[in-house]
Length: 185
Image 1: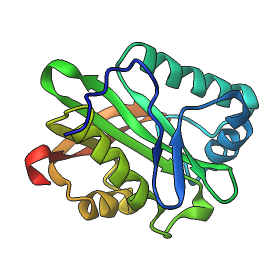
Image 2: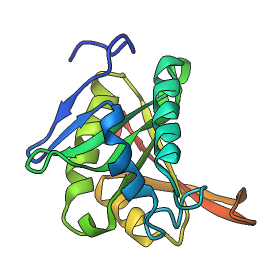
Image 3: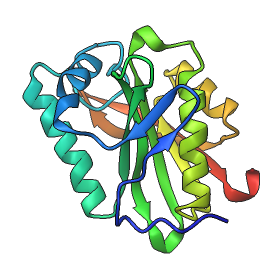
């Protein structure tokens, strides 16, 4: 088993096509492009970004959750173009219970190319092996069919439906809760 992750240094992960790394100030325009796309944020709890400051604030949140040891969010950098095309990571990390929630997003022009499957496999491996997670959860809008398909492909099981669980964009939304256990690997 690998060395246990301690939040001392932000980890870099590499897949065949992508480098997963911490955010830096130079990523702000790529994040603005990502989160200003209404199709990308359709199932997210915020409206499309309108300025580079919105992207900088988002990166500030990534730094905050890492500093607090409550999560970590990787930038998905295309090794060929060196552009950030999405993010993936954990939030709601509960060390005592060995669980965290995974989240991810990707430029709409990159959908359907197996990118998130490749990236999420590396992030799940890190969660189970370095963070020593027993359970990784995901909460998705049941209408987000692409995300539901991805979770099934990654071996997640749906545990249930959280009815009208969040108030987003002026309405209550249901969230389907999925999980994958260490023993499912």
